Image 1 (cartoon, rainbow, N blue to C red):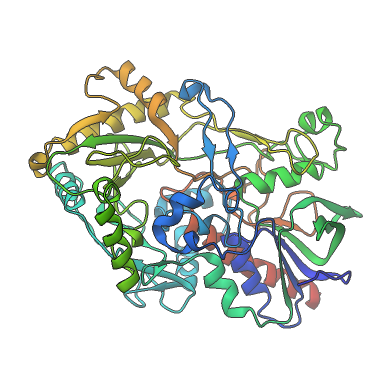
Image 2 (spheres, rainbow, N blue to C red):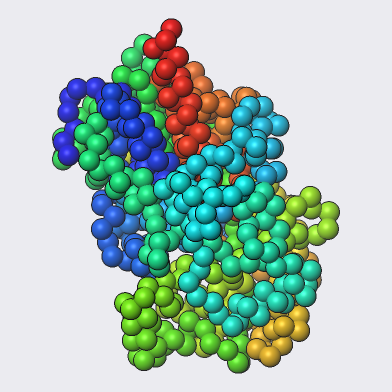
Length: 540
């Protein structure tokens, strides 16, 4: 559709999970004219929808921003690929499809920091509202929403054995990670419908495509925000190679994610004064916290070679295996092509002093050196483990005012002493699980990082060598009350009228799990607040 010169009521920038849900909710009222902008293209690439196709979407400029971090001192100077979805549906089109809320503590901590209304009791109904859970409505799950949640469609003998080994190590088997306390081991529930990826575009946009008051534009990247009398008034973007000023009568809402939202604010003159002045950008409004407080889950990928067992490595390595995989998926949407990147999960404590599980495992019947490379030719499984509540903090900063220059991303992984200690403990716990009797018949041998590494210092160094992102950046437009806060508890940018941020960047602290569905919850709550504020203005 063509954008018009007439102002919209709401201009939403970014059609990831938050943007798609907000477009749905705000356009329910036919009196609201809503514009949704997406820098990427349509989600019509076949590999988006075949679950295992994430391997072909990550690192692909058709679907991924293809960001890279700066050289990370905590990772022995390595620079990491930093995938972010650049397509309709955003990162929900390229992620691991895991349905995860985190822990009740996460949200109660947000509320304790002064963010009224963000405790677990307040957010649980919002999770349920958008949920379409396979088991139906219950105290913990909803069935009337758009966000489809289903069980995995296959299991693996090696993963079943790992689950038994976890139980033998004290990590009990559970049925559901999403009741507020996710400690235990289970197969992940996933955002799929009958073996096909269920992204935010399918969930929230396709059912409302007929709404005449909603305009969705793809291939449109916002360059900056304009202001009138201290109020955000328009988004400047190129639409079909022409610069347009897309005006908003009520609000501009940034849903560009933990990388995109702070960089758009910075290009618009909102952010830390030293950075803006260094780049020659006029300081519209000084907010030191824009782009700071970056948090991410760093995964340590421990790989074990096995002697007796079937893994995806062998199946992909043979012609008949590939044919069989294709046939199974074509016939009934099952088999390895239907599998999420990680099937089995576990949440555990790195030491007994932790108040709740602070480690998350993603266990996979496969291995590879790094994303984008072929699977190993020998039989393996990977036990990836991440620190759920890292204390290291990083930054996202623009390099110039040019929209096409990638930002500087510095996560500062393992820069905090406590994170190094947890990483070493995580490797030790993984080894205890793998040494449990349930896995003995598979004769596991540690391929990475190597069983010879035993001391605290060696394990810390191993974490620096094998650590990589699990793609959960948050926190760069922090919600809160202090001088480092970017938005208030209603997600309004401090000091600027008519401008909100609604995405994972507003998280004060990272949730104890995967971040896609918490982002949808944030958008669900934002929709309530936006509509309530609009009604109050009209009434006043």
